[in-house]
Image (tube, rainbow, N blue to C red; front, side, top):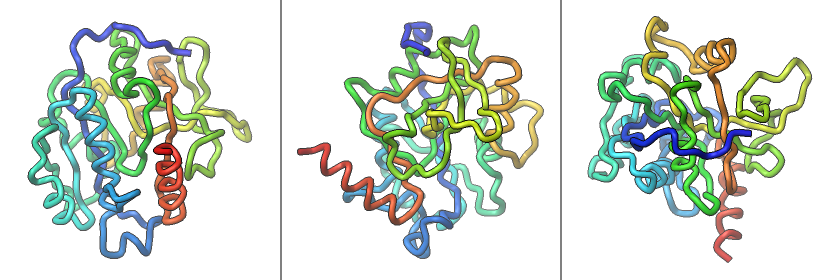
Length: 246
């Protein structure tokens, strides 16, 4: 399993927050509110992620918008740490990978973070994003994923997403195989991976390419991961957050 190291001497400064989805599984809450702004224990999910990025030293976050875009843009308008750049996808949803491709001019030429807006977590002793930055090794990695244990995850009813060997290298489970690791919605990517890709595509395309090249790695989340994708998961996450404060 991948251990934290100090390969990356320069902290990652740019990130992409995926916030353009329709939030269909979160209805009826998303009938009038975009999913990233749904509140969990009084705080918008989007702000949990932005606060974690601020803590880890990220300076600029690109936020893509589509559904109820005006509300998201108004919410982040006055945020200065990290600073926010909007990537407008009102005309067409581009899927997770296509949204990043469109935003590349804002993300620079160095590795950057990509985060989902419907996954929040309570850190363990240290920031998980900081641990990822320390574990990032560009000599052998194209992508580094944060992985959560499915055994104690909140709101996760599916089988796991990846197998991870003792070196942190990832592979997909075989048909019918159960694996204990779920993708926690946080990743570090090299920008050149977005060369020669379609305008609309899923990040799974790049995950699979990296698996073939043996350059997809993972690091295990320390703390509690909450996949907040349904109204029921909101209630479960709120309970866990309250319990953590006792």
